[in-house]
Length: 410
Image (cartoon, rainbow, N blue to C red; front, top):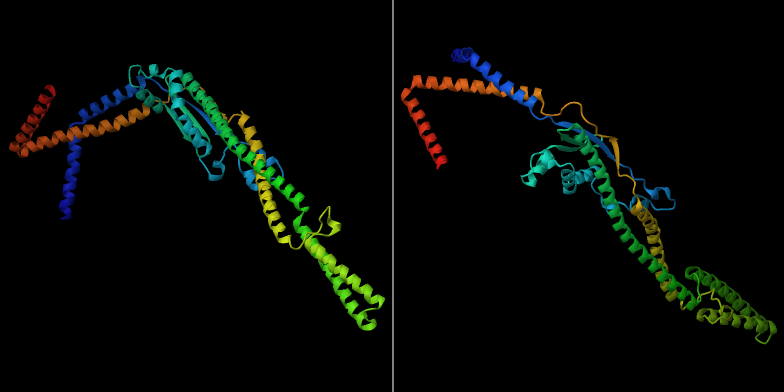
């Protein structure tokens, strides 16, 4: 079985050699004519030159980083980026690609450099002109992070001019968009800044009115002072009560020392009542000590105002530097694109490539030549093996072709 398979393979190989040698001149001239024709067309057709410019996004210095006393969140928030600085967004290079591929840039270039005329599309649909422009331009982000802008044109100087013009328009539009974004952010931040300022003014007025109404300055500290003062008075009262009881048992109620101790004890009780009720004459103008009965109410109201005021101060501390930076970003006009390589006119054409055309046409014509030769050999053997079937196939194909051509004429 294996010997028979080897024999068939050898027969097929020798048959291939035989057919190739038999039609060698046909294959030679067929491949030569097609390869020479395609290569000649590539060499004689319109030459296209390529010019490339390379750019990088300009680094934006964060002005907040040079300020001291700011929270890390405020430093990390850029007013020019707005809320996207917190939520995350596309890279600058991706934004550059969107601008370069936009209709604004496309229409501008086609109109300025009369590409309709150059592409011979003056009477065609505008979409075809756009497609030609897209096929003659290339925008790529390289691994190093730079963006390359490539333009093909029949005139090498014109290709360089278009590439450099794209760079200038990219910088112009991106700067404009950044200013618009900064203006919108400035408006948003300014609104919140003014609201925070208004809230602080209102709370400060409430705090002032509260202090004037109750004659207090710092409630927690004054309550602490009141507790210490009351504790001291109670200690004195307990001491006087002990002294009074001792004197009463020793000398009796009528003794002058006992009467004096009783008077001192009564005065201490009176002082305690005055402090509790807030009627102490010594605090008539300035209430350094807060009445115990009013302490819970005053402390609760004071802490509400104080807590809201502290929150607004914290918000203002965060917003104010952002507001100042947003105003600066709004009027900033520094370039947003750094040009690494300016486009220049090319010395050699970029396309069509004669060598590539020659290689591709050689391979295709060689395969096509062998296909024609072996198709011819197949039908020749088919006719020898079964002439009846061969005639049937040929007649059927002729009939089908006749019907097709007849329909086309109609």
